[in-house]
Amino acid sequence: MDDNTKQQIGSPSRDIFKRKHKDISKELWACDLDFVLVEKYPFPDIVAALDYKRENDDISFSENIAYCALLRRGTPVYILIGDAEAGIFTIYKFMGGNHVKPRNELKELYKTKSWHDFENWEKEIRDRWRKRYSK
Image (tube, helix red, strand yellow):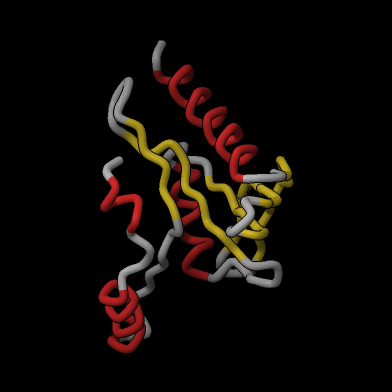
């Protein structure tokens, strides 16, 4: 990853787009996944989706639909709750849900103590994905 990519924080123009999209029609549902892990080898694909939440954040209607769609294609979804600055997270795996009767099933997997600890957890996720598809 080059230095310019590393330094990107957020895009005000993307935030404006997302905000304006909410105004165009109530029937045009969308959600913004926080972070999608990708790999190049053994073939380019999505490894997992990560969504960062604050302690009292709920999973929205549209997020539930997106998470369930990702699960149907075999892509795991992880919800991270915690301190993004320190890398201290409780990591949950989204196991399924229902957008009609709002329900989300989460399984607590791991608690990180630092960004280094998170890095090791992410490497394990990627290693499992590679092993699964390298056969």
